[in-house]
Length: 320
Image (cartoon, rainbow, N blue to C red):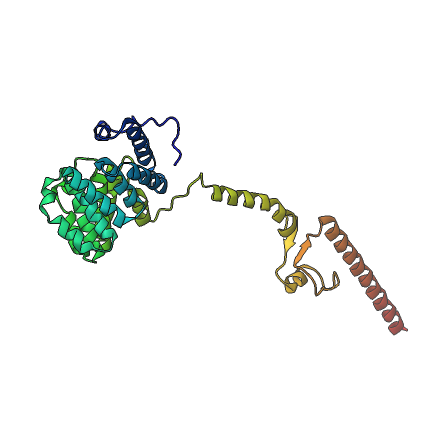
């Protein structure tokens, strides 16, 4: 696996460097550089991180830090069986209990939530610091949910750490998990309040509490920088002139829905209805209307004069 030139290996923690001193210097440097790449890519590119971890593991499988790094890389890529193997090896080498919660979560990943619950009751949990104990609660509650024991999951998360107003690194995740457990237990109104509390504590965006809160409130977020959305808007803007030119009637046109509307607008003698009529005709101009009225008035006047002359002629004949 290629490693950038700017990666020296000295970026890793001092205690890991201390562990690597058991290796020849050149080998230790190679392992250290691979471990740096694992740390760099673990969150953003976990599959690549996993590949670097396998290189480090081949080079120094007897170093606890290497086994632990390989375990986390496997865990992040959902290779739970491999992860559990590496975590167990690291724990045997160090005797530490801090990997206990993630080992229990691997059991969940393997479809064995009952084992995860059993681990939550082991003596090793008492050896964990506050963050580790909170993590163990999260895993145990997740195992309860896996077993569809939703009310029990809610109870599992209820603790002094949850009730505390103080904000720690794990606070947002704990509040978020509690809100999700409430949702699963059918307690949606309470869940909304806890999603809101999770948002307050989630300063680094470690959860999607804001999105879940918006979803409950019926708010839809639109990403203004979404390239697909921008492309769609551009297509609509490009199509608008074409619709105005060919498909939509202008202000100088009158829209008729059917032939009856046309007949009401025009006199019977004005036009013969075309069977292929498309319903759009131009408005008649005012000059055309005036000319038509004048012509009709003239015709009416001529008819009146003719009728009057005819009546006069008939009167003369009757006198005779």
